[in-house]
Length: 218
Image (cartoon, rainbow, N blue to C red; front, side, top):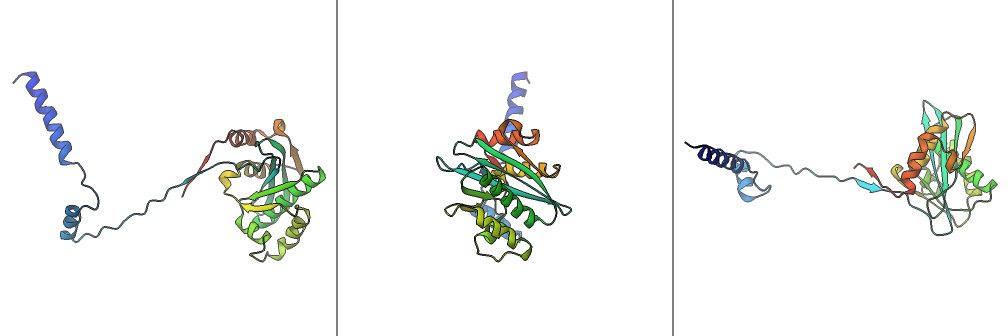
């Protein structure tokens, strides 16, 4: 047999093999019938999809405050960032809060952010936290635990009457998360501008500023 004939038979054999292993359409009548004869029940597998999240900037001419708390082995810290409608950083901070729990760290980070803004004459019209618990306690659907009740009261005294506070996933709150982590290395409170951000935070800031989304798994 010539080389061309051998080559043709090999190609034909590969095509036949490929056809024999071609999967049938899932859920087809013949496929379901075959499974029924084998007493095999099909269990549908739900497919969950993640989402892409990116920084939400405030309305034109307004400022937004993102804060986050961190608590590891009862050591609390927090951080936050103030941005304008272009996503430009106006103010950032990191701080250690001593011992406590995660709810205290979140509430204290929000309070510190509002105090720093008040001292500098910055009016905040929009606040975002990735702690749904604190947001619900602040907006009154839930009764806050006594340990943070006074902190939330101080927050309400500082936030402008027309400002809103809402929950947002951590993927859209990345800079505040990095600043909170940096707070564990601080002695007291550190204030940052754009050019003085810690190296661990600057890349996240640039990612947010450029509008690059972050993936949140299901």
